[in-house]
Length: 397
Image 1 (tube, one colour):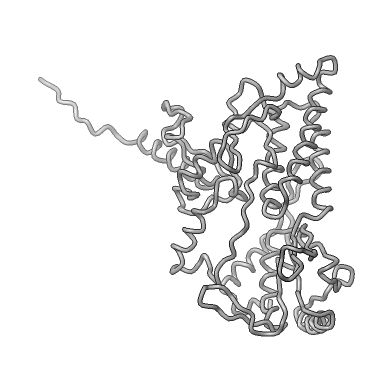
Image 2 (tube, helix red, strand yellow):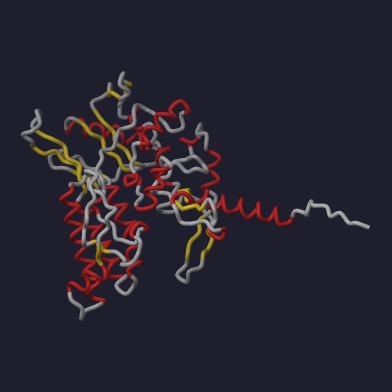
């Protein structure tokens, strides 16, 4: 707790650590357990504590930055670069000797915090051989198009692609007797999340290859349900077109092999997504040390958010249209709508009062905001129901 001495949220973190955890038994019952020491494996507070504990690693490595006139940062310290995500980090150096020296400087700094580098995971690797970091493979390749004669490529690692295939394959196998709607409902979040994660780093050919593999799994799933039917019958029953899908140039495509429910409105998400529909866009770095908590940078973050397309934010179909209409903002809390958060469609005029499922009557809101909105509506209705009648009846003698 030494690093939390001057941390403004120290008391909140202390309460969080003592809050306890809920565990679900094999019989499906939830049990409460107190936390006397440490945090549970994979707990949501772990990244927060690690970011606090490892804060200042750049200063320990002698890395200093200076803000340039264009708003970008320039290194003015030792010829090193630190890339860190919670407890996973890379220290990029110019030579192997410099890398070994940096490791020697980190050991005593981590020891002061009760931490140490893992001998199994820590290694010095030349960038020409490449290495994996956060599911991505980073490697330098020779190139005749560049003046320097080489270029660094970041692409999904073989393990990441293999794990995605295994995960989807297990889902197809587990849901071999389920309905088509259940299969699509479970696979779509996995496809959307994986595509958005690797989209800026993967080539379109790789996406098309995975889409073909997914089509084969879908056709095997459908053929297993109807072994006596032919290929044409299976196509009519389980596959079709989706005219709403746009190409990168904005043109409408008519893919006849989309795994979807026949007779359903495809705009409601009753079709299996394809990885190749993900629009590739490089991530724009944040200028300098800009923070979302800085009130003077409200316009800067608002402009960045407006450039995010619905597909990049993880929305498709009708939710994508609502996201675009609202500029990616929840109308209740005025906070951004992110794909990591669960969102709901809120009816401005409730359905029991005749409200329709039309875009003019819908709002895309956070789950918590949606719950609060309905609580307010129920409270207002109960107050109106218990108010005495203020009308006065005039009786004649």
